[in-house]
Image 1 (cartoon, one colour):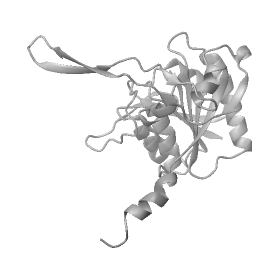
Image 2 (cartoon, one colour; image 1 turned 135 degrees about the vertical axis):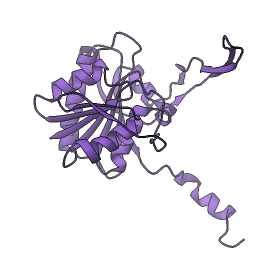
Image 3 (cartoon, one colour; image 1 turned 60 degrees about the vertical axis):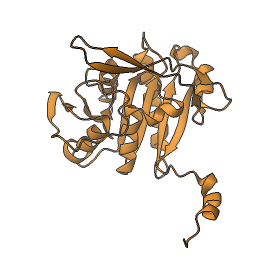
Length: 249
């Protein structure tokens, strides 16, 4: 199997490199990742400047683009006939609930799905002391499952691994997206030359602990598996808006 790896933490991320080295034992692997951290860039595609590719190892490339750019470059330029599977991660930090809309990690998997390639985003619910070796083993198991049960059209998986040792993980749980509680702040400051600048911050670790969501699953020691799709239509509202907006003015 030809696997394309990427991330939004940057080419030097330990999780990316450990996953590459482990998967190379049984698979052909190509790595295309940002040359620096590109967390929270969402699904940005670079159109206003040239993209550069720099080889940093065997079939391992760094670019000045976004995670979505990396997938495009990997598929169209670097991965030959095209990968059989795209894995984005292993990400340092979770991507659950509404965070998937900001996440470069999730966007890379979504871009792969746009291109018709089975894609998975893998994240760790940790902020330090990352158990990358355990996460690699879990990712390998996910690859086996997806290989035996191919993803449906326009579907990709968002995986979040709890911050416990693999011996304490209770298994997989298929879950819906939960709800993060944001309290972001915009802080205004003045630079040494008297200019005003702004810093967006705040604690976004709070969430609603609703049964069946990704937050609920990970909180209880399960690996959350959330199938995501390309269609973002709110189908529950279609009927109402057909009444509000008539075909004739």
